[in-house]
Length: 259
Ligand code: PGA
Image (tube, rainbow, N blue to C red; front, top):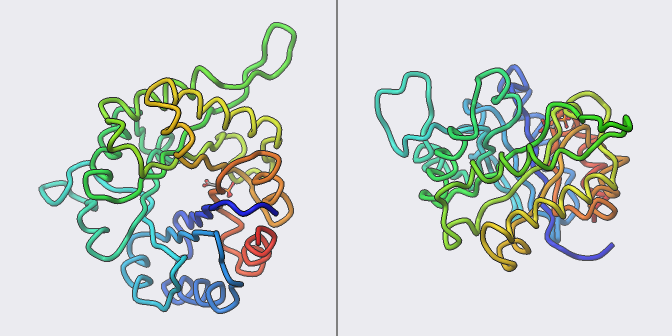
C-alpha cells in the first residue's frame, strides 16, 4: 500500500459507561498496536474519561481528542460547557466539531460550528470538521445525487472568516448521516467523488495548495473489512470511526489492514 499520512479517529461518543471499561478498552488497543508508521491515531473518549486517559502510556503517533468544545475560548459562565483551553491544558491536540449527532440532537448550526472552529484554531487545536447530508436525494430519473450543495454550504459557513493562513491545521470528515451507525456505508466511488468535490471547494475558497493539504476523512459504518478500500479507492486521508473503535479486536484488525 502507498505510504501517505493517514488519520484514524476513534470517536467513542458516549461510551463506555464506566472508567474501568474505558481504560480496559484503551489498554487492550494500545497493548496490541502494530508499529503505526504513517498512521496518526486519535482517541476521542468522553470528557470525563479523557481527562484520566491522557495519563495512560502512549506512543508518538497516538493523540487525544475531544468530541466537542464551547466557542468561548477559556472560561466563563457557561454551565455544563468545556472550553478549548481546558482540553488543551490536559494535552488534547484534536477536537471533533459539528458531528451530525450534535447537529441533530443539540441543534448545532453551521454558524455555531464556525465559532468553535475559530476557537480551536486560535488555541492551536486541530479541528475535525464533520459535514454530511441527512439522506441522498433522488433526481428526476430516480437516481441518487451527490449532496454537493449541502456540503458546499456546510463548508463555506463553517469556514467563514477563517483565513488561508489559519486554516492549515483543519481536517474535514465527510460523514453522511444515513451511514452513521447503520452498517450501511457509502460506496468507495461516491466517497472518492465527494472528497474531490470538497477539495475543489477548498481550492475555490483558499488556494490549490490548501485544497491539497487539508486531509479529507470518511466516516460512517467503517469496519475492518472496508477501511482499506476507503483509503485506497475512496482516496481519503483517514477515517472517523465510531462503533468499530469500541471493539478492541475489530479496531486492531482495522488498523492492521492499513499498515
Ligand atoms: P460509526 O460512527 O462508525 O458507528 O458509523 C461514525 C461516527 O459517527 O463518527
